[in-house]
Image 1 (cartoon, rainbow, N blue to C red):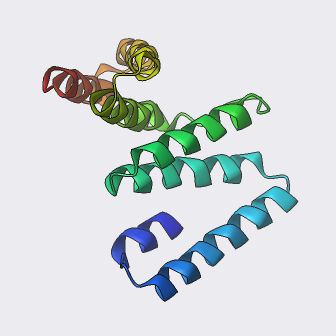
Image 2 (image 1 turned 60 degrees about the horizontal axis):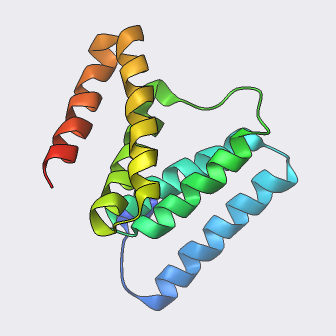
Length: 140
């Protein structure tokens, strides 16, 4: 809900941005205090997608890395039918295109392997995401 609100009410007004940031911090604090790893993970997922949409690729990647660390504590990760891998791939591709660091290219390769696995499980649900990532790779 907060991610959608951020997109709908996006503004450069510092007062509105500060209020939104305080709201996000409150949500994160509540999830942490309740020891809700799933909610924390979802906050990182939605936060990384919003950051990607606003071209804040470094922030998006930092949120993904925090999510990866959190997922190590979880018995099962949130996959959302390949959507998390898809957005991770878009974010890592954006960083790979922006910089010459090999790290991002390696991350893209990992995501592509995941997506290929998802296609094997459910082609109709995942093939289009894989094709979009492949097109994005070839676009630069």
